[in-house]
Image (tube, rainbow, N blue to C red; front, side, top):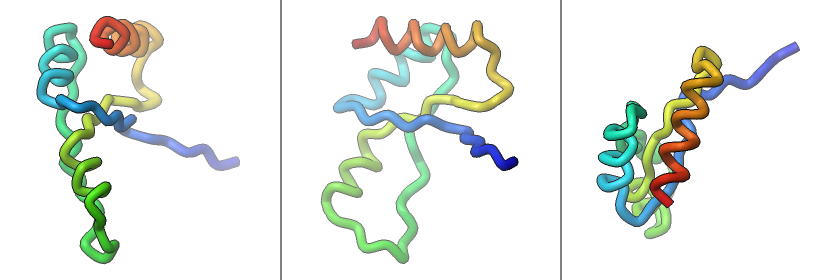
Length: 79
């Protein structure tokens, strides 16, 4: 059987730098989403806005339940 594996969970927020600072202060390593859409795909304004307002949340099979809970708690305390 095959299983999909993701390394990031991308969220969109009006102020990505503020969310990143909050997550880092709560022990969650993250960064702005710096993976742009491929140039071969025509980009509308929505794509540019998405790229500039998205944050990558770490998400791998290696994360423990405790680490996942810390990410969830940090995000919940932000909103």
